[in-house]
Amino acid sequence: MGKLNKNYDIIVIGGGPAGITLAKMLGGKKKIAIIRPEDYSMIYCAMPYAVEGLFPLEKTFKKDSLVTDAGADLIRGTVVKVELQNKKIQLEDESVFNYEKLIIATGATPFIPPINGTNLVGVTGFKTEIEMRNIMGYVEKGVKNAIVVGAGAIGIELALSLNKIGLKVHLVDMAGSLLPNMVDPEMAESILEELIRSGVDLHLNAKVVELHGKEFVQQAILDNGEKIHFDNIENCNISSQESFSGMVVFATGMRPEIALFEGSDLEIERDGIVVNEKMETNLPDVYAVGDCTQFYNGITKKTYSGKLATNAVPMAKVLGFNLLGQDRNYQGFYNGAATKVGKYYIGGTGLSERTAKENGIETICGYSEVTTKFPIMPGAKLVHLKLIAEKGTKRIIGAQIVSEEPVTDKIDLLTLAIQNCFTAEKLAQLSYSAQPYQSFYPAGNLIVMAAEEILK
Ligand SMILES: Cc1cc2nc3c(=O)[nH]c(=O)nc-3n(C[C@H](O)[C@H](O)[C@H](O)COP(=O)(O)OP(=O)(O)OC[C@H]3O[C@@H](n4cnc5c(N)ncnc54)[C@H](O)[C@@H]3O)c2cc1C
Image 1 (cartoon, rainbow, N blue to C red):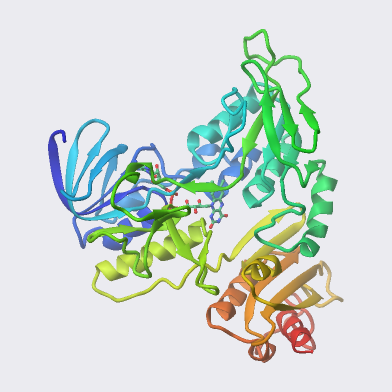
Image 2: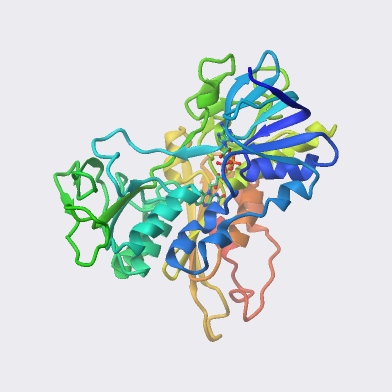
């Protein structure tokens, strides 16, 4: 290995939410360095709204002082080699650092399917500053068409943002309904109508199998035989014989960033580095947290995808507390998450009816619908809840909400119920509040009504 620079108690590879959380917890208490290559850590969740122009792109940059003010060193660089036996890492500039403990927080990268044409100009994933700048650059250069592949939260948010700034947008997903990992199809119906109303062209039950073009992407072929052509446009100021008229953005999920450890003794499976409840890997003094790990669902205890910042941060906290001498365990993914589609705020937590069935769990569901204020109040909007319970025990295992007002507080309350193994009986006894501007009448509560329906 190259020249030795410095010794640390702890080195964290990765400056995303997991790495920053560890810096905040351990900085000043341990000699710790966070290593990341990019100029800025990003507020990924806000990226679609920067594309829409709600704020300048630079607002999605996190301040380095989040790390340095906490007393952690921030090292700009890419780790290119890790000697797990000798406890050394090497950066691309050949500098070498020794550590006592290594924390891998390398995150995940957008999955781009292995199809023809993904090397064409205009084809991109959507995670890094560079990818965001590329997309915004294409728009500035006059590109007027976009295909967004993947109708999960990121894909829909980006599709709507591009649509709002005047592009003709096609949204393609191989699933038959929108947000398939957040809500069941019947809860997605109003969302689908809203998306169609917005002008986005939907292609469900369809897979992009090929992209065509010479230098620039020009056409996408779907597995149902459909072809999406980008129309040529005038005034496109990219100098080329061929016109640059459209982009294809893949929002088809994330794959753990584990290239550094391939061929090492570290236990790695399909979803990432295998860790236990304490975020320990199979190797002593090597830990992993966040999107680069494989972990289990808190309900089924089976391996489950959970590539969310709201999982990465609590994982990092468990590890941070343990490295400070506590004894904490991570409970698993519940995947409470939310998005917004036009006038609808949507949230989901726990298992959907579909994923419960896939896990061999028989379900019973309760639905409720109330207004967000007393119905006689101005501005009262509808809110719908689907509550999913295990059939035998009536344990609550999932919840989905579609509302015209924000839903994260309700989703978080329901996640708490799921985490604590509440049954429908217990949830039906929820002691709730009511006020004309903020809830339905005291006579009925959204959550209690759905729980009562399960009990019926
Ligand atoms: C557009 C978008 C919207 C999202 N919206 C939401 C949302 O609304 N809610 C939510 O909970 N989650 C959301 N997510 C997911 C969330 O951003 C991720 O789950 C989260 O960033 C994971 O954090 P992490 O720290 O594990 O990894 P990451 O944030 O991926 O960070 C990994 C870090 O490791 C670094 N790294 C990798 N390899 C090396 C190497 N060899 N050397 C040095 N450094 C390396 C990377 O450069 C990066 O700094 C969104 C993601 C995207 C892309």
